[in-house]
Amino acid sequence: MHRLKKYPNRRLYDMTDSQYVTVEDVRKLIMKGESIHVVDSKNESDITRSVLLQILAEQEQDGTGTVLTNRTIEQLIRFYGDRFGRVASRYIEEAISAFLEHQDMYRSRMKQLNALNPLNMMRQAFEAGFNPKERQEPGPDDLDSAAQGGPAGPAGAGEKGREE
Figure 1 (cartoon, rainbow, N blue to C red):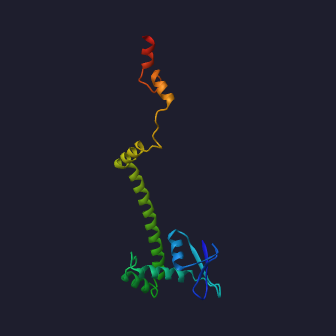
Figure 2 (tube, rainbow, N blue to C red):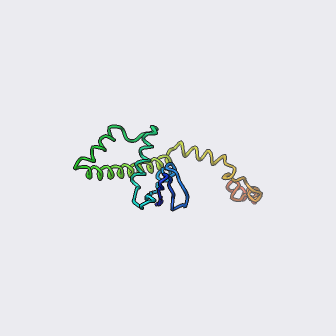
Figure 3 (cartoon, helix red, strand yellow):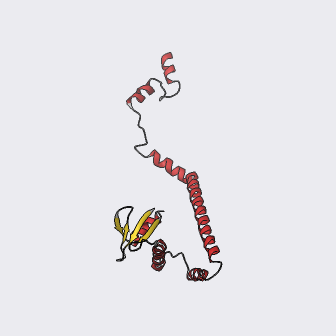
């Protein structure tokens, strides 16, 4: 978890990495799966939710790949005055957790299916056949062994040579 401190000049200081960061840097941390905890530098109050909501608002305002429709945002606002707001909060959290779990299972299965794909297997075999690092050329010992009917040569070649 990254511990951040927000100063009156709106600058964020990452106390974990000992450096100033931007809101975009914080967003990237979250996208990588990191958690954050943000405190106000004046009174040490927890302002994590405020920073998270700011990041969310900026993401939605950006317009590229919005997640929340206007209708969804309106309904979320309505939950604040509703007695079922806490139930809705737990439900949304559980639904997102279940969605993420299913997404991970889907990705895992897709990787497994990709590994079993016959075309993928043929491509890998083709690439391995032409990869100079993986391909072994016969060495001088292999050639001598083949000439004497060893394992590299045709079966029984050495025995016929001895009989004649």
